[in-house]
Length: 241
Image (cartoon, rainbow, N blue to C red):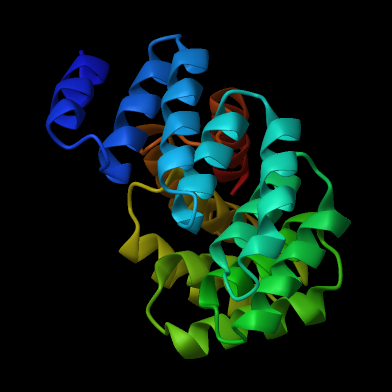
């Protein structure tokens, strides 16, 4: 069992934060989230001056459907680390998961106030707006800046392509989503986005191929029934040609 292996490894290196996180996550995945949380709560006491320890505990709280505890923890410790970006970034991610979008944006803006070239925060902000179809010009600005910092990042390319798709700028969407899909072939969300733009451009056979890759990919954040429905719709369109 993974939790047992991590526990044995940690017995030899009890102060190793990485091993503690592995053990805690393994416990959560085997239906023992409270035990995993207890492991990381103990680690936080020993690593009280390390932001990464609080982030690890907050992530476990969030994964264990204890989002309120994650928020409380991160809000309590953020003032302790005024130059840190990991804590407000994680707080933004927790708020996003809770659909508290205004709070999430505020947290990511605090990251950028401390580190204006934080590409991950720029991407997160831009994608949040694109996903909701809001302030799309602003979304594109954030995402272009993220790509200036990391030009070949497939996730950032996907985010920009999705913002263009939501803006109905399909040629720009296609270019970025194709590059992202070519780079991250097993990422189901990215392949789904690529399939959507291909379908809208009436390239139905290519859309079917993209959505087929969705089903054989990592499967994260995907409604398999919804993808099957998209494939059937594209096949019907092909039949009408």
